[in-house]
Length: 226
Ligand code: 5GP
Image 1 (spheres, rainbow, N blue to C red):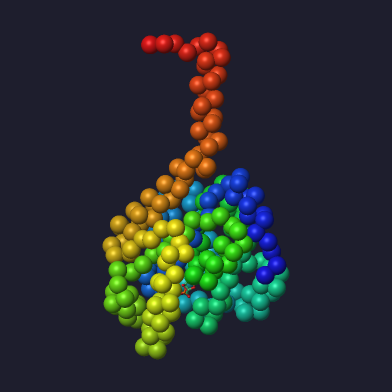
Image 2 (tube, rainbow, N blue to C red; image 1 turned 90 degrees about the horizontal axis):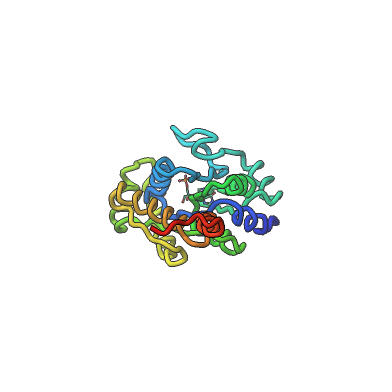
């Protein structure tokens, strides 16, 4: 991967925050993030590129940018990916240019990526806010995977095996949300986004603008003591 993290620092300094949401497959992270993005303004979900064929009901340009293996490899060679990973035999990647454009526009961006991808983004020194979503228990995750009934027994066992490894990485992240009840988990993620937006380092210039209105009134001699 040849592209550096430098342009991101600039886009971030002038624009939005970069959130990462990860969870084991079947935890419901995409549904959660889609809901939060609907509920909050100026928050966008990144659309990944994948070599995986679309499943029934999935739309190109909506769920993913579905591309051929050859195009994925070409994008990789061109250093187009901010991060990428092979998951269950398919490749997935986040476009650096797409993400940077959204941040530069002033929107906050959520990457829904796996733990390997998170490590790559962080190793580039890019500032991120990581949220790890956990299922209430291993048994509940297994039930959910079986309920989706789109995987074979072998695939379910493989997903559970990968899940066991992934959940143990929760401490790499800044926040943990348990997806027990959908509405509660959505509210928790929205609360994290709102809290991060209220940090002094994010609010500094808006706050300083307000402070200046106090100073200007004092200099004008307009301030009245009541
Ligand atoms: P699925 O094929 O079920 O949609 O996704 C499989 C896994 O790939 C999920 O764990 C998802 O988080 C991960 N994934 C999707 N897009 C990306 C991406 O752009 N980068 C990385 N690192 N993982 C991704």
